[in-house]
Length: 264
Image 1 (cartoon, rainbow, N blue to C red):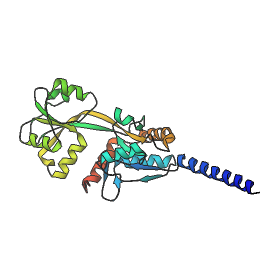
Image 2 (cartoon, rainbow, N blue to C red):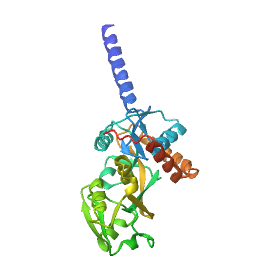
Image 3 (cartoon, rainbow, N blue to C red):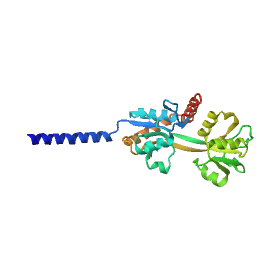
Image 4 (tube, rainbow, N blue to C red):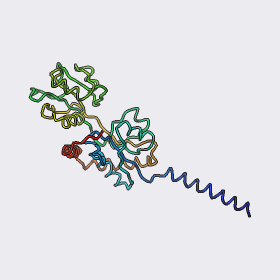
């Protein structure tokens, strides 16, 4: 009798361990997070994450019946680490790069495009500007480490005369001091700086954009719900077919401008 009890107890223990192990690998919900300082795509207002990419990702998750928790995960580098170790399942918007591919699986469908603009001093004459070719013969500025995409990186390196500055603030200072004729930058980070520093009236944005790089939704390769990525991607594609993404971004940026908080 005692032996039978021991065998029964051992079997029950093995069963409970198996159930626990299965539970640990099952997909119940996902943790969603975003870059807290990248309006209009995403920003943290001190209480929650907001922005165009957050709205789209949560809408698509709802459409495929996948529960989620929206979580502020700290600065961008900490956010990436959270996805790398599996604490964050989904990052709502970021560029695909080889180093990120090592720990993130990306949607095939881009969620938005991230434009690059040319900024000049307000009042400077650029009547004949038609794009990147119009910048030849002028002295420009770029920010160290920035990658534009859309073929612009090679064009800047091979065809334009540019100085590399440490940051957006420094490049706008050089532009204001007439040390450079123009500043090439991803559009929204530069606009964010101008709005928060009260310098928006001092500079102008030339049209058209000189490049547009696609941004994607990244899923942690350690996510228990990674098998849902394919369904999410299909739903994202269907959703974006009926959405004017430029209008969504402009609306989101207008929302941020009404209370341009940047929590660091």
